[in-house]
Length: 202
Image 1: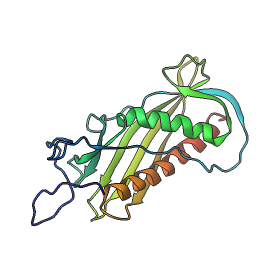
Image 2: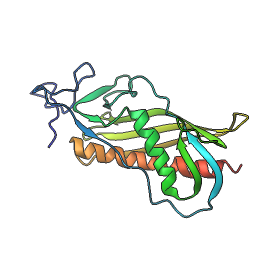
Image 3: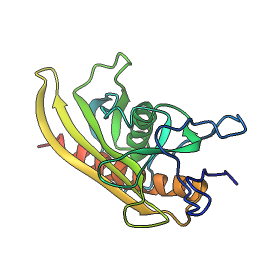
Image 4: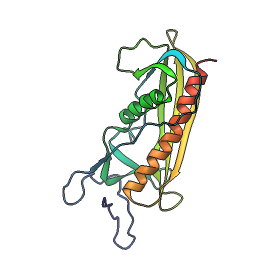
């Protein structure tokens, strides 16, 4: 089981302050975690246009491999001995592309870095991507993604939307918290995919 840090022995809080290193006291590297793309999409009409997904824009506190937690609306901390396999925005970009592919309803979708001649570009903003302890222990993971669908080549905004997911962790332990991240991301990603596939027809 992954060991979580204690702020004080008396309180036994399973959290780490933002100023602390990702490395636990013994010097061992943090255990790495990833999420899975969304799947199990309802059937729908297949679209013929092509989509590029740009790297999500994020505040500096989320633009990191560290796994964020929140105790209050004005603070961001990190778990001490766990990390994402990549910076969170890069990880989410890949997961969103795979989620679109899993829908089976789009002819071509790729990361912004690839030379795909796109009909639309999806601009994503990471607004929340953290385990929230504000309502108690275990935390509720909150994922909130803003999106703008850009029509090419005129680069006009075709539509914009907010996708959101929340999931209560089964326990205040890293594996359970990562599962809650996965559940919350799947909720938001399904909303994002289904909205994008319908919004481009407007």
